Image (cartoon, rainbow, N blue to C red):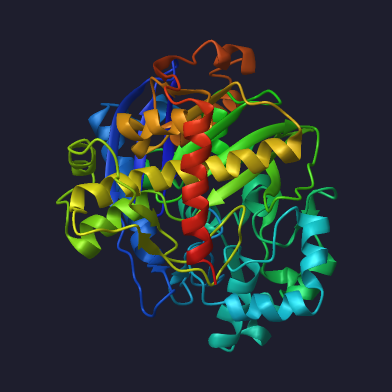
Length: 491
C-alpha cells in the first residue's frame, strides 16, 4: 500500500496523478476547466464542474494505474489559491460561481479600504498586500451581491477556497477545513498568531461563522466517502499549489527558490523561521506546516505567464496549440525589439498595479507573429526576473540556482532566456509536475510512506540544467528595455 493519489485542481484543468513510493508518476488523468468571463476583468469557474471533473480524473487515474482504493495510502489535495466560493451547509449547493484569483471586480473596493487605512493592517498581520487577488474582498462581494449577510451570520453558509470545497465533497460534507498555506492567502489569517484574526474579519466585514477550521498542511483531514472509490481513503495532505510545488522541489531549507510556470508564474523562496517583511511588493506567506512546526516563505506572483501563450492561441489565433509557440519563437533569432507586457488583469509583484493593461511595444513593419511569440516567452522570463531581484533584496540572500517546474518549464527557449536574464543556472527536475508531487510527499509523510524530509531529498533528480550565456551588460540592457515597456503599461 505505497501509492499516493494527488488531486491537482488548477486554474485551467483538473488533474489526478498517482505516485509510487519513489515519487514517480505512474498514471495521470486530466480535464480542461471551462473559463467564464462575464465582464471585462471578471473570471469565474463552475463549482459543480470543478468537483465532478476532479472526481472523474481521480477515478480515471486509479483505473489507469490498475490500483484499487485499499492500495492507496493517502490522498493529497493541491489547488489554485485565493479562488473563492460560498455554499449552503445544509444542501452543499454553491452560491453562484467561484470567483477566480485572477478576477479584478473588487479593485475599487480595495482602493476604498486602502484609503481607510486597512492596507497597513493587512501588511502587518498577513504579510500580503490589499489587492483583489486575495479572497477577503471576494467574500464580501458574494455576500453583498446575493444579499446573504444575515444567513452568513446565522452560520448557514460556508466559505472555502477550492481545497475546502473538494475536501467537503470528498468527505460527504463531514469536514469543513483548510490548511495553513491556503488560509494565509485570504487576508484574514494572522501569520504570527497562526489563526483567523478577529480584527481582519471585522475590517473586511466577514463573519467568523463562514470560515473553515485550519489544520497543518501535513495532517489527517478526514477520509473519503467509501462509495467514491470503492473504499475510504485517508486525506493526509493539503497545500496551495505554489507551496506544494516548493515542497515537491525539495525546497525544505532556507534559501531554496523555485519558479512554477503555469497560468501565472510564481516564485517562492523558503525563509525558514523568518517572516520577511517585504519593502519591494512581495508577499510573506506560509511555506508548509506540520503538527508543531511551521516554515515561512517570500513569494512573488506574476499574473500572466502561460496566460500570455493562451491569448496568442485563443485571442490572436497565431498558434494552434500552446506547444506550437516554441517552434514559432525559434524561427527568429530574437524578438527584434518587440516587447510584450501581458498585463491582462493588472500587474502583480513587484508592481501591484490592478489598473495596468497589456501592450505590445516596438513593432515595426518587419515584425511578424514569430517576433510576438518570442516576445511573449521573453515576457514570462522578464516578469520572473523582476520578482527574483526584489526577493533577494528583501531576504538579503544570494541566489545560486533557480529550480523550475510547471508546463512552460518544458520550453527550452524560455528556460535558456530565464538563465540569461538572471545570470544563474536554471534547473529542471525529472518530474516537472512538482505541485502534485509536493502534496503527494506531504500525504506520504503523514501516513508513513516516507520517514522524513531527508528521504524526500534523496528523490530529487535534475533532468536539465541551463547555464547563462549572456554577459552582465547584455542582461542589464535587456531588463532596462523591459522596464521601459512596463512603465508604459502601468496606469
